[in-house]
Amino acid sequence: MSGPSNAEKLHTLADWCENLAATDQRAGFGKVIDELDFGPGVDAAMERAARQGVVLLAESGAFESAAVALIPRSAIYSGGRMADGQYVAQVILQGGVAAHSRAARSLSMAWVAALVRALARQSVEANAAQVN
View 1 (cartoon, helix red, strand yellow):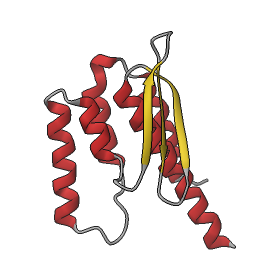
View 2 (view 1 turned 90 degrees about the horizontal axis):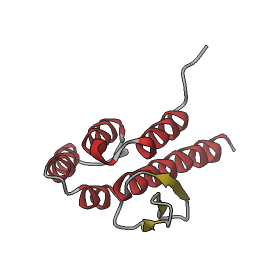
View 3 (view 1 turned 180 degrees about the vertical axis):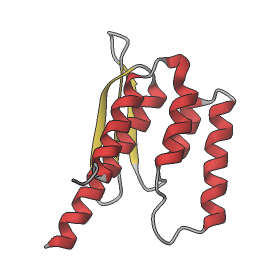
Protein backbone atom coordinates (compact mmCIF):
# COMPACT_ATOMS: atom_id res chain seq x y z
CA MET A 1 0.00 0.00 0.00
CA SER A 2 1.41 3.39 -0.93
CA GLY A 3 1.64 6.38 1.37
CA PRO A 4 -0.29 9.61 0.96
CA SER A 5 0.24 11.56 -2.24
CA ASN A 6 2.05 14.87 -2.27
CA ALA A 7 -1.29 16.66 -2.67
CA GLU A 8 -2.74 14.83 0.35
CA LYS A 9 0.30 15.78 2.43
CA LEU A 10 -0.07 19.41 1.39
CA HIS A 11 -3.78 19.46 2.26
CA THR A 12 -2.99 17.97 5.67
CA LEU A 13 -0.31 20.61 6.17
CA ALA A 14 -2.77 23.38 5.21
CA ASP A 15 -5.35 22.07 7.70
CA TRP A 16 -2.68 21.97 10.40
CA CYS A 17 -1.63 25.56 9.67
CA GLU A 18 -5.21 26.81 9.91
CA ASN A 19 -5.65 25.24 13.32
CA LEU A 20 -2.49 26.71 14.83
CA ALA A 21 -2.99 29.24 17.59
CA ALA A 22 -1.59 32.67 16.80
CA THR A 23 1.13 31.98 19.37
CA ASP A 24 2.31 28.95 17.34
CA GLN A 25 2.86 30.66 13.99
CA ARG A 26 6.64 30.30 14.26
CA ALA A 27 6.23 26.50 14.39
CA GLY A 28 3.94 26.70 11.37
CA PHE A 29 6.58 28.42 9.30
CA GLY A 30 9.21 25.95 10.46
CA LYS A 31 7.16 23.01 9.26
CA VAL A 32 6.00 24.63 6.02
CA ILE A 33 9.47 25.73 4.98
CA ASP A 34 10.71 22.16 5.48
CA GLU A 35 7.87 20.69 3.40
CA LEU A 36 7.70 23.10 0.45
CA ASP A 37 9.29 22.07 -2.81
CA PHE A 38 10.55 25.01 -4.82
CA GLY A 39 10.33 22.93 -7.98
CA PRO A 40 12.80 21.85 -10.62
CA GLY A 41 15.23 24.29 -12.09
CA VAL A 42 15.53 26.46 -8.98
CA ASP A 43 19.11 27.31 -8.13
CA ALA A 44 20.03 25.63 -4.82
CA ALA A 45 21.69 28.78 -3.47
CA MET A 46 18.62 30.88 -4.30
CA GLU A 47 16.33 28.32 -2.65
CA ARG A 48 18.51 28.29 0.48
CA ALA A 49 18.50 32.11 0.61
CA ALA A 50 14.71 32.22 0.20
CA ARG A 51 14.20 29.67 2.98
CA GLN A 52 16.55 31.57 5.28
CA GLY A 53 14.76 34.84 4.56
CA VAL A 54 11.36 33.39 5.47
CA VAL A 55 12.76 31.79 8.62
CA LEU A 56 14.38 35.08 9.66
CA LEU A 57 11.10 36.96 9.20
CA ALA A 58 9.16 34.33 11.15
CA GLU A 59 11.71 34.21 13.96
CA SER A 60 11.53 37.98 14.30
CA GLY A 61 7.73 37.85 14.58
CA ALA A 62 7.03 39.32 11.15
CA PHE A 63 4.58 36.53 10.36
CA GLU A 64 2.51 38.30 7.70
CA SER A 65 5.71 39.36 5.92
CA ALA A 66 6.99 35.77 6.07
CA ALA A 67 3.73 34.52 4.55
CA VAL A 68 3.85 37.07 1.74
CA ALA A 69 7.50 36.15 1.11
CA LEU A 70 6.40 32.55 0.47
CA ILE A 71 3.81 33.54 -2.12
CA PRO A 72 5.24 33.66 -5.66
CA ARG A 73 5.51 37.14 -7.18
CA SER A 74 3.31 36.07 -10.07
CA ALA A 75 0.48 35.02 -7.72
CA ILE A 76 -2.53 37.07 -6.68
CA TYR A 77 -3.50 36.93 -3.02
CA SER A 78 -5.96 38.48 -0.62
CA GLY A 79 -7.02 37.95 2.95
CA GLY A 80 -8.61 39.43 5.99
CA ARG A 81 -10.38 38.92 9.30
CA MET A 82 -14.03 37.98 9.56
CA ALA A 83 -16.41 39.38 12.19
CA ASP A 84 -16.11 36.15 14.19
CA GLY A 85 -12.33 36.61 14.49
CA GLN A 86 -11.34 33.91 12.02
CA TYR A 87 -9.11 34.73 9.07
CA VAL A 88 -9.72 34.02 5.40
CA ALA A 89 -7.35 34.10 2.45
CA GLN A 90 -7.17 33.23 -1.22
CA VAL A 91 -4.14 32.59 -3.41
CA ILE A 92 -4.30 32.38 -7.21
CA LEU A 93 -1.15 31.00 -8.80
CA GLN A 94 0.02 31.88 -12.29
CA GLY A 95 -2.07 29.81 -14.66
CA GLY A 96 -5.25 30.30 -12.65
CA VAL A 97 -4.94 27.56 -10.03
CA ALA A 98 -6.57 28.95 -6.91
CA ALA A 99 -7.33 27.87 -3.35
CA HIS A 100 -8.54 29.43 -0.14
CA SER A 101 -8.48 29.21 3.61
CA ARG A 102 -11.69 29.99 5.46
CA ALA A 103 -11.12 29.34 9.13
CA ALA A 104 -7.56 30.12 10.16
CA ARG A 105 -6.61 31.52 13.54
CA SER A 106 -4.13 34.05 12.10
CA LEU A 107 -3.79 35.94 8.83
CA SER A 108 -0.33 34.59 8.11
CA MET A 109 -1.44 30.98 8.49
CA ALA A 110 -4.52 31.70 6.34
CA TRP A 111 -2.24 32.86 3.52
CA VAL A 112 0.10 29.92 4.02
CA ALA A 113 -2.79 27.42 4.08
CA ALA A 114 -4.26 28.93 0.89
CA LEU A 115 -0.85 28.81 -0.81
CA VAL A 116 -0.23 25.22 0.22
CA ARG A 117 -3.68 24.17 -1.01
CA ALA A 118 -3.09 25.97 -4.33
CA LEU A 119 0.21 24.13 -4.71
CA ALA A 120 -1.57 20.84 -3.97
CA ARG A 121 -4.19 21.60 -6.62
CA GLN A 122 -1.46 22.60 -9.08
CA SER A 123 0.29 19.28 -8.41
CA VAL A 124 -2.91 17.31 -9.05
CA GLU A 125 -3.59 19.20 -12.27
CA ALA A 126 -0.01 18.71 -13.48
CA ASN A 127 -0.19 14.97 -12.76
CA ALA A 128 -3.53 14.71 -14.58
CA ALA A 129 -2.09 16.53 -17.59
CA GLN A 130 0.82 14.07 -17.74
CA VAL A 131 -1.54 11.09 -17.67
CA ASN A 132 -3.60 12.49 -20.55
